[in-house]
Image (tube, rainbow, N blue to C red; front, top):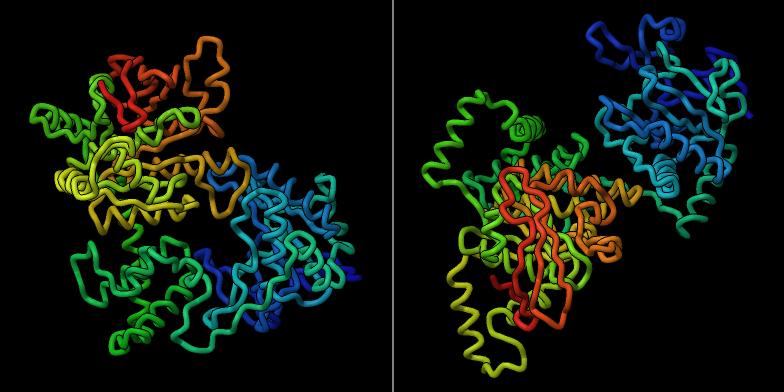
Length: 572
């Protein structure tokens, strides 16, 4: 068992990484590699910060760290999340050290090993800890399973810089001289494998070594999903692109990878692989690849910052809105139900519309009818998390042709369908996105490539995050991201939602926005909120409640209409 000769022993015996090097900060705050051992006394005195490169050349580590931050109050639950991570480690019997960051509003949870451990195994272990603690760990060091061959790997600041401090198992302040005594994982490789196997039933295998320059990095392969924008661009799809050159295609691929937060060296490796696979070596030099990737970062940042960078006074904005009102050029997408449109007009670009109800009350019918009506104006995207494309098609047949009990031959039915959709823009259907990340990618692809202006999602609570935490946090984040994407792409989005049981158990039977299941964030993000109420399914009488309209008046909070379940149509 290791014992440290404090304080120098802390750095020598515990915070170990690439041998013979450390990182030194210059006057401009940048870190650069330096030979030999760091000036620990200067670091402890707060005079000159030092760090180390946690990954060794053989892709192993002596220590690892989970970084739980609260930058700019972005994560006020950081302390509770750290508690959850530490409890999971205690349940697994893995010793740890908890460090409060120098800001006092963040923490690092350290593990130390008696022998070097493969980085891929350490990262797999942290995934198990994240799964058990349900925190959503985003920063784990090491940051990759293998070194890319470019650079020295992940730089980590040594502890005890300025106000940084260790805490003991009860999370009270203690002297650094006692903080790390004996807190190592002995027989580390065996211990981590045992924990991973006990939770997942499997042990990860060592990632493949990529020796060929035309091979993709593993992370890029993982997001190269069938039908994704990345796959389409990779295979030469120029849809929606003005510049149809191969260099522009490389630039578009690099931007997608930047948005997916793939590390820069792996983006460069991917672009190099594309050039080799597509015989574009005359341009695909290392210098050209680096310039292309650097430009892609600038392009993404400029696009994301475009609205905030533009300058306009409130007077100019008001005059522009007034001109739109007088000229009648305001873009509004009506629901297709006259009584509802008389109350709220419809949904505008940049707005998130929520329609909520209990199961089997008509949410999907509402969404399909509105999508069909909006398609008279613009291309539409339907994202169905509940029904297959064939089931959606069957709903369309019911609405346009009629039910099976109605006498219509095949040729006549096909003619009716063709005439109906000839009078509309395309309505694209996508099923089973599953995650909000995939949903965002699909929306962006159809907006860019097919000029979609209106999206209908059935339904919001069926989406999840790739890095799931609690259900409340997942749904809250999904709602915020949907709100952000409608603003960024200037589209309208209708999201169907489920109500909880309170909607039917309330004495007066009137639904409320707070009945929306899983998270109150949905009603906060929404610009429009409607709820559906079908009191007697044997009758056609139907109620639609208008709860919220952020950008205009609600003329009638309760709208009475009629629903034909055989045709899946609302009237009136």
